[in-house]
Amino acid sequence: MDLTEFERALENFINQAGLWAPLLFIVLHLIRPLVFLPVIAVCIVGGFVFGFVQGAFLSFIGLTLMSFISYMLINKFPRFRAKLASLKDKLFPNRNLTVTQVMILRIMPFVHFHLLSFYLMEMTPTRREYMYYSALGLIAPSILYTAFGRAISEFPWYTTLSMFLLLAAIFSFIDKWQKQKARTE
Image (cartoon, rainbow, N blue to C red; front, side, top):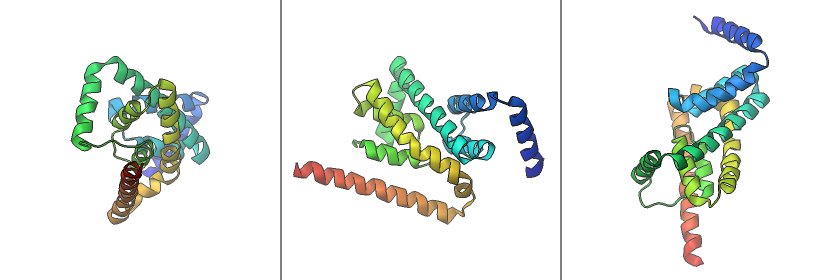
C-alpha cells in the first residue's frame, strides 16, 4: 500500500467513524503505552488526521487523561511505583528535578512518560497540584508534536541530534541555575 492509498483509507475510516473519531483518537492515547507507541507517533497521527488545532487539542486531552491514569496506577500498584523508582535511580541518580526540567523533558520524544509523571508526583503534595503541573507540561508537546512531529521525524539525523542537544543544554542550564539559586538562599 502506497502513501496515497493509505491516506484515502484513513480518510474513509475517519469519515465512517464520524463523531466517534475524536473519541477513538483519545482512546488511542490511553492504550498507547500498552502497544508501545511513542507519544510523538500518536500526536503526528492526530495532526495528519484532524489537522493542527483539533489534533493538538485532542492530543492534549488524551495525554492529560493518561497523566491522570498514571497517577492512579502509580498509587494503586506498589510494584509499578517501585519499578519507576528503580528506573529513576538508574537514569537520574542522586538528582532532584524541578517542575520546569520535567516540562522540558516532556518535550523530548523518547523520555519515559510515566517516569516523568512519577517525578511530578514526588514534587507535588496533592493530586490537584500534580494534575495542574502535568497538564501545563503537556501543552508544549501536544502542540509541537502535532505541528512539527512529521517534520522532525523527516529531518536528517544530525538535525534531530542538534535539537536533542539543544534541549539537553537548556535542561542542564536550568539544573545549574537551580543549584546556584539554592546555594545563594
